[in-house]
Length: 260
Image (tube, rainbow, N blue to C red):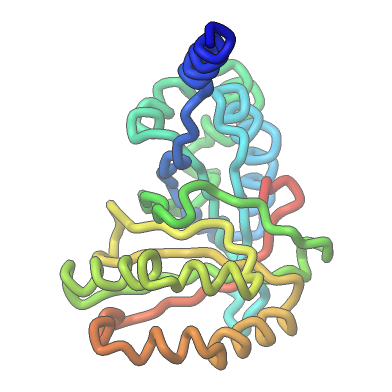
């Protein structure tokens, strides 16, 4: 009897020291979109991001930064953009970043030419910033499993605007509880992120990025999605009617130094 009691006591004690498994905390993302007037500015920005900005961020604990450029289109001006995607564990980490960079030796030394550009030799025209919170069904950035050359890949960035906050919350529900994220996963869309825009120029809206080996793969995946029985059932539900009023789609590819 004593052996049984001792065994039960040891089991209970062991259970007390087994760490509790928690769901992953939802990250926050900042999407910075830089606009340039010349290819020379784009090249300067590439050098700055690769040799100063990303190394400094890594030293500050932000080591999974994505940098993307638009795929070739019929509009040459559309190519003069760079998209930078930064992950944060909290809004406090995002808020404190500029102060920490201002005291980082790598950032100041390697980025000096870019950061201290004169008024007649500007490094970019403007940049905009969008702040997002990750979906609960996709709480952290994911690295896509692709082996094609970066310039062949298609990173599809989508923005879904809703007519009101009520419809927006409904679209979030459709992605999470409704199973839209799950369906993307099942069909191998290799999503980098899904995020609710909490500060940006066009709200209410959400954004997400899916990835494909090439344009042909992209078309095949979306065909499979549109014809999937699960999507036909989900999209036909009256409770999700009219929750998207506008969609923007941008095709990107990752730079050689991008983490994604």
